[in-house]
Image (tube, rainbow, N blue to C red):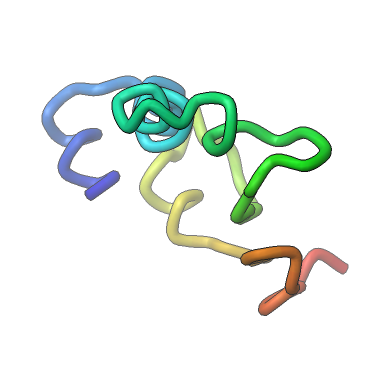
Length: 77
């Protein structure tokens, strides 16, 4: 999905925001999901690279995955 948005001309940071906070607003759950802070339901990924200069390669280089507070991948070291 990210690749198609990027190829259609969307800016990288707009793509990320649309898939997190803006989606939460659309679902009426902006106080529950789509942001990171204590007591929020957050699934988190971290990527390695420069998201603004090399979006596709960076978004495909996932080094950390957390879902429901459980770490599934950690290649950050």
